[in-house]
Image (tube, rainbow, N blue to C red; front, side, top):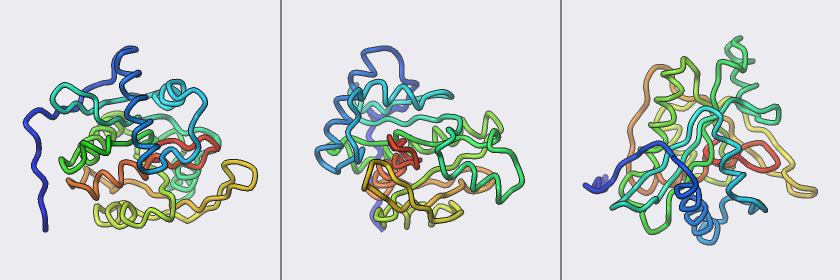
Length: 207
């Protein structure tokens, strides 16, 4: 199995200020052009990123450049995974947290950045005694395979309408119980991008 190098100039830190937000929007535009994420480009991408960060947001820096992003938020009424997790466990949706807005610059892949970001968001959820959940577009088979290998539990497959005539199938997952699994490399980065597809009309990111 190939193991990607962890670059010495790589770190994950809290997103801070307008400068970080502008850098995150630039990276998001690169990801959209390369991979089509987000599926529907937001009219105000900065607000789209800010809207998910009710519990926290982090960026990955490689050699001083912002190359990735992730957010953690409380569940919104149109999120699918939190409600499914609540039904499965008998615990209220307020005990869940949604991993979202997770993406990595196309030029920075191969360093396990997606996995680092995912683990950071999950660790924050655990610290707050919340259970991480997310939604993945069903066509993202590589991301699905990785999440399942890491122990994420499939809750259900649901269909959502993001725009008139635009229906998507989402696989809804709950994070593994107790701790986080590790992964690095391009597959982990694919997870990062796929995690962003949430069940809302303006899809969340990882989740």
